[in-house]
Length: 121
Image 1 (cartoon, rainbow, N blue to C red):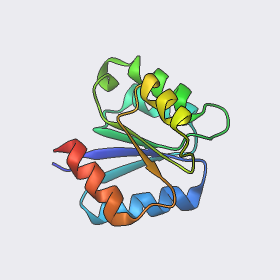
Image 2: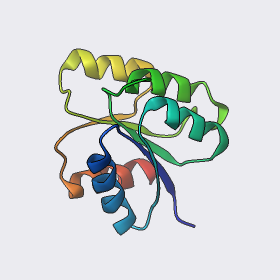
Image 3: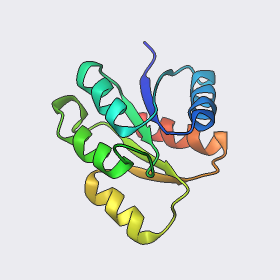
Image 4: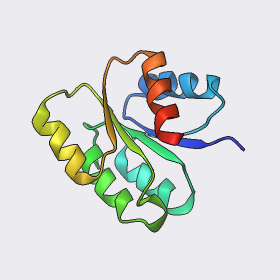
């Protein structure tokens, strides 16, 4: 059975690019436009991994990760930040919230695929 990945980004083009890259590798992909929508989806749907942006309206990536980690089904799933932010302070903030990894945009499809496959085993 194909693994399901939730991609969270306020940019539709980024969601489409991530989705295309992952679907090409055989993954099921769900999309959310912000952290609030992602948390609603995570509350009623099981996913194997989350890839999220940091800077989003309504609920940002850090708050979304904290919210996700409070859900029983999301305590241990990989959550990767995919963002333009590359400062160490932001990375530490993400890690403290529960992020598993960090990829800086723009990303290479091979890089994204490699990280996803490594984290999902």
